[in-house]
Length: 349
Image (cartoon, helix red, strand yellow):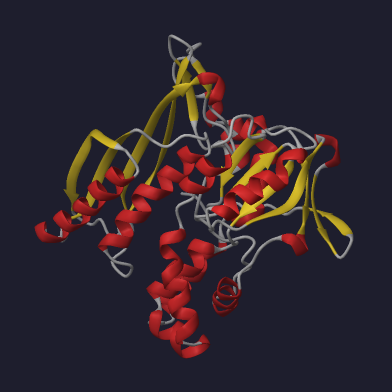
């Protein structure tokens, strides 16, 4: 039994899982690895297939529509890091036995609609109802896309000298979900305005458009992308640096943290730099392309900030605060989960 909540840690991937991945096939160009969002399998004719999997959300306190949105878009965010939208989807549903037929149909209708909206064809999976299923995770899914193999990006491709960009704001999804899950507490403690702004930001938790706009020009200069999930923006940059075999310099004062996200994180005793931030995308790019990419994103109403640079591995992964560089801390457990469950335990509404 794992002692921590969240994703498996780096050493378990390196020392155990990577050595035990079934038959080795030459076609698997990018397999499972720390900080890598997608796997890449080479096909004939210069094409490749990208695959990514994630849990499916079913969070009663959030709502059926919102749960379906997270189920679809958290997978789509991973695929977006390739520079392409997902094309096909497989869904495995392990639903609570007490979920009514009506609620299941509402939930699935939203899954269908959100997939249709981004061009995903649902190709199969499994649906079952399970006694004792009380988790907010109701199964898992896989998104697949096929594209020219020399055009598919992965987080391994970042290079020393690349600039690091972050779209939107840190802690975007954490703040939105906490506000929507504990509305009375948020309204009473920090005000209705913060509650409404945080709730409204929920549907900004897709970073698919961020990625597609960033790469839409030929020779865009984008070298790699990594979406911000568990571990927050600092965790995402750390993972991208490790995946690409590099170091990084991150300027703390440049990290974008919105007033709403800051207030809600403070209420739940969270550091917004380190908690789940789905909807933000970390983008590395050639230095000379920074202003062009930022302008293109901002023309599409997506804020984007330069927050650091990729360096040689020997320089380490550094967070620079008040002109002082310290080794960036990486936490295997995202503090969001503890904050969420503590709020529940303390009777926050």
